[in-house]
Amino acid sequence: MEGQSTLRDRFEQHKERLSRSELAVVEYLLTTPMDVLVFQNAEEIAAQSGTSDATVIRAARRLGFSGLPELKRLCSRAMAKSIPTAERLLQRFRATGDDLVSIKQRVFSTVHEIMESCEEKLDLAEISHAMQLLEQADTVWCIGIGRSEVEALHGKIALSRVGLRARHTGAAGFSLANELIDLRAADVVVIFHAARDTPEFRLVIEHAAKLGCGVVLICGVQLTDLYRDRVSAVLTCVGSATGLASWTLGAIVVLDLLAYGIAARNQERAVATRRGLADLRGRLP
View 1 (cartoon, rainbow, N blue to C red):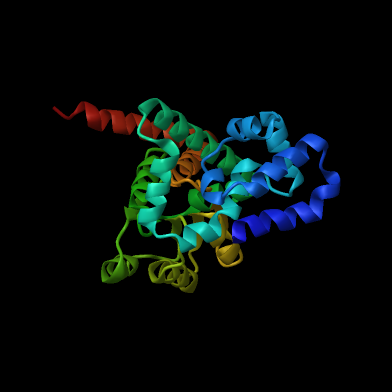
View 2 (view 1 turned 180 degrees about the vertical axis):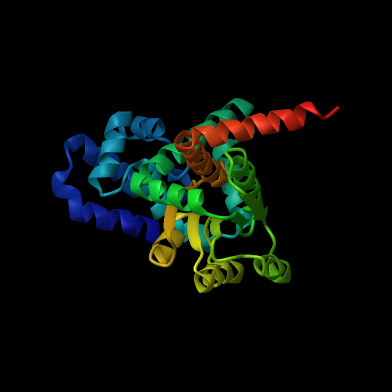
């Protein structure tokens, strides 16, 4: 399988750097089916390889990955593309069983994995640049592509609450075209999209470029590689190879980081906006 081939190539490149205990970890990784490996955390791999959590993480980094989450994510890409979604769901069932204690542990472990991976990927200079763009925008458009309308709505609310003029849409097809005719050169577009390069995604970026709008892309790793040089700023969020928790988690936290950073740099405006919001709420029955 391609995933094991990726691991073996990394091993051949870096084997001289591995300690004896790290070699034990890599031997286990190379002999374990990828559909099993992606559901195992560092503690489980350590138990199977007779090593420690720290050794597992260190071995992943010795192989040139940022850590175990990236190792699993990159090596399982081919599997994710080739296996039907229904079969992947069956794989999850086999990995977790139906015991609620086990399911809870695995889901929360996946959430921690997503958060740690997102933090590793974020570049402070890119975040600062994105904040500057949003602060200077006439209107911030939060656009959710595909299943990302929830992230777009969250972005609109979070940015409005710190004093920015914002709107959101999760429209597709002709409905998206109807929305985009309102876009102006002084606006900034924030696009939320996890993975697939779609016609709607390309349309938004091309139309924004035509108007001269700034574009902040909050996306997955593959879209980052494709569009880094075609937009104003890219903030990469990382999902999980297991599918036990959503890419959405990282995207929402990244937007919260942007919104709070803008509030902290424009405290008077943020406080005035919050007071105005409290006044409006207080007038409701």
